[in-house]
Image 1 (cartoon, rainbow, N blue to C red):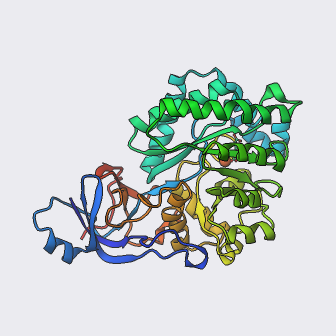
Image 2: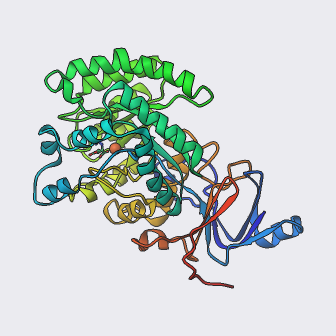
Image 3: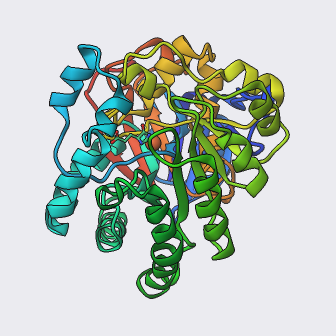
Length: 424
Ligand code: NIG
Ligand code: FE
């Protein structure tokens, strides 16, 4: 298939973009792409590719933007129920961590999720994933973390494996048994930390080897925060995970600076996420490392907080910056990377080009998949979007309506067209 006549083909070629290099879109005007068997086989100008592939079936991009599918590298997409009541309380002034300390927040979703059947969890999560897909997300990371007991955490993974098989999206998996202190260990956080290390992680390894033997091991993540896991407990969990061969992620500095970002660098974590209250020393450490800094602007927005990830400090330090939705029922129920981009432009002062690179090639790198997705280059998986607009800057500029017209996933075309765009 030859996709032709893109006003702007955003290739994002050349690998993850560090520091000030962020925002190189690699634009080809009047661009075209040839796809065969799920993969990209040619990239260039329309006239050139039409001449080299005269008999190829065609798809007209109608002078709109053609770009890589979004990669959302941080979500908590699987859960039961909702927390509309808490949203109301938070907007009336009650702090998020106070609700958690009183047994609500994450723990109220844990209570609901523990009693939900796997069928119900799949049925609730599927439409969330499909809405993400309709908004242009072609690969999504998904965390467990609303079980906080071995059996439920593994049930969540089982449901996610099923959803990976039955939806057009590709999922990347993360075990977040250390999302909060389990209610049974309310007065013994160290006891729960030891349980994660001594029981859950070894069982996870064994479970994965039987249930998903051909897939890479999932990431292991920790919520390093006051009222969740201390820096020392986070170190204990991540060190144990690393010794079992798991790649690492961390929730760091969402509300307080505990040093989680520097811990991530020290342990060679794939990413450190949130990074709102991150210190200058932590930023300097990230800047010199391969740990991707994942910003989640929907989270302070969702909580009506003032501070956002200091993107420009990270860029100046030379860090690899990525964006995600953090989709979850407590702090950010947003399924669209287009909203993350719009907020990143306004509150983190990214340009649309920087936000797009942070949502494609760099976010692919944040889940270790930049070798196969995140850009339009020969040999990569054909995961692409045709927008309904001629200029990439409409991403960021416009928000709240879906600018994606067609999603191309592994070479298959899915139409989400609302039927109004410029034609030649
Ligand atoms: O990334 N911070 C911890 N985890 C989520 C919130 C989860 C929840 O409130 O249910 C986050 O913001
Ligand atoms: Fe999160």
